[in-house]
Length: 535
Image: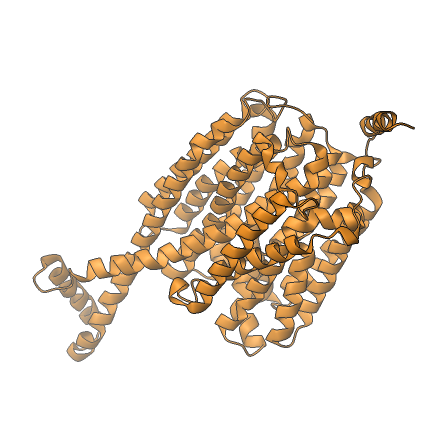
């Protein structure tokens, strides 16, 4: 058979292929696996003090259980498409699920910090293959016009899991043990494994993309591991190590820059790159990659800022702080179907994405106005609902149009890079927001302290009010003299912290507004349709 005839036969076979299982059931089962992995990136956070005490480690050392997971996860994400081509996408997906469950069991049995860090690193390594493969399977299972609805299922995992992670982690730790934050993956993973085994299959064009282990681009792999691994360490440990005041963080930053820049140059020039950067030649994919950076930074930094404010400045418990996020997650799950069924068929996708960023920017401006030291739980919940409402106009429309004109042969590499960019942007967003909170709090403390002088009448009046209140509680003059400076300083710290959060909310709003002009670089299509080209 000639090459032309073979190509024609392949095209006919590809066009005739339909998944044997129900496409919506396939979307659900692959999303269960991804949900499990995304949940593990946030569920551990609130349990760190318990983990540290259990394995006789300091809290600072215990944070390596987070760092090790993120480093291994970040390295695997961009190369998961290649690994799938070597061993088969379905087989790789099943291996990732099975080993993620095994590693989760091992994490729950760890008796030392060293064991836990090793097991978490392994868990991150296998977890890194779940999200990209989930997206690739959905892209190949659904025809373009139905992908918007399918990505709505994906959105539930990506948005809902980080929101409920802290709440679920706090509840499991307080009610049972920190070990159950890992063991809960076992039944979920078992359901996902056997469901995927029964329902998912590799389409013919995926089978034809078979790669050999001998073709592995070791130089590209090494540069990616160096660059992304060091970047994740820098982002995760920077705040604890005083950022660039630490020689360790400076070294990580230099190695990250060398690795990432070297990887880009190498992958663009080598004949058989481990990940194909030529996906960025597709206009919609390139613009969508920029959008997912903004979405990732917004999603993860917002999920950290509000609970952190509640815990560190307002004295909430970890579980109560996590509950602030949950209503927002429920709201977005209800909003997503409205956006994809009612708005996406009628309004150009890029307009929806622009409105989403506008809504997020407006919500952060609103947050900067209503956050005060006496803010109540209900106000924080409404603030968070307002913040995440914009994501309903972002995630599904952006994912749909990003892949709308990408050749399906590049779906694997595209999904790997797309998820990697979202996660890296999330790590950068969290670290940047945390660093800015610390910096602005110090600035506001320095500014407020200048008013702590007998020459400033409101300060004198505050002292008199506090003295009268303490006398009413039965304290003596000497006790009042000793307690007064500390009481005033705690009030000053509380005010400085709230002012710092208000500043960072304003910065987040500006960042969201700055993304809006770039949304108009997308093709003018509705529902991710054929506005910019086709498969």
